[in-house]
Image (tube, rainbow, N blue to C red):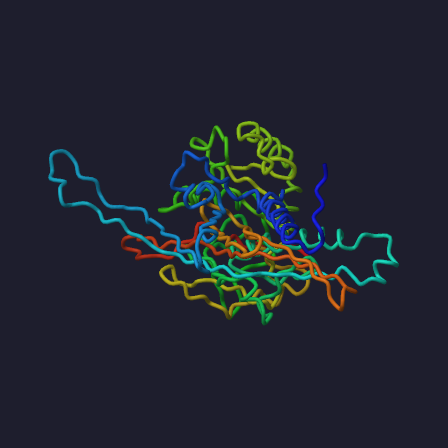
Length: 422
């Protein structure tokens, strides 16, 4: 027995929308694999909130599928410090107060219509344009998801702008609407410039950032990054991949690098060793695909090529926070004019757990965050297929008390800016 769902049926719309939802949340892209799994039934609280694991860089929450609203509030618990009480000294009444922050994330509706042609177009072509339009729409929504996540994590859209970018430049009039939530430049304590074989805090002189054409991505710089991470007062929380037997003893930090930065990694004479390291760790981490293929493992950094570079060309502004205790962004410092068309600056991203929040709502008709719709236009002559999503992303930021150094806004992702050859 077969079931025939006629064109325009509400049931057809829901089936297609659920198909789009399943396709988008299960895509085999790098950024989608950085989302944790939804909890098992035994994890009652997370099950109630319908929130993915907090051990992974991207935390997805479906709370707004259950109630009306366009905003999710994350309650963030700050770490506590201070001295312990020793021996028989009185401890009662000396409890350290818990400190909470809140971070808000808005959601909005995103839609993309695609024309499947008119009757004569369908007549002239051997292709089934409706199927092609549907496949193109699935691909478009997947690219949009990945690019919005990447821009939020990086704290900048950058200025690379080939035809595959569907998130426009920040100068575009619709940019703020498309990214839904404000893009936050990296906090000062989570942002570094390459300086030869080392890293340094962001700096500028004469309205140009303090980088030279020799400040390229290299492994000595990564060794310095490791020492910085080990000595941080409040380091990034490492990612814990599902089934990783070494997660506690040898934690992993995903490092997203641009294609140009990755080329420096591949050109290293020990590249095959780093690949072998990743493959070996994969065998202890449930054969997670992130560890395979082009990935490499060095000093517990899982080096992965990001889908698109966050790039700044000569004369472009590179926003950064000049004060450790403020989120105020410096917006006037530019990539050196001497770079001309020969060099640019690319941003690598070292990801900690819970560095990006992603909230999904519920479409009224489909019942899931993603939805599709088909409509006949011009008395049935033309067909338009629409793809959509209700959701939003935002970088998660903590306010941490550093004692004598004050309360500092702190991301859980580190931005590393290096020069690349064009």
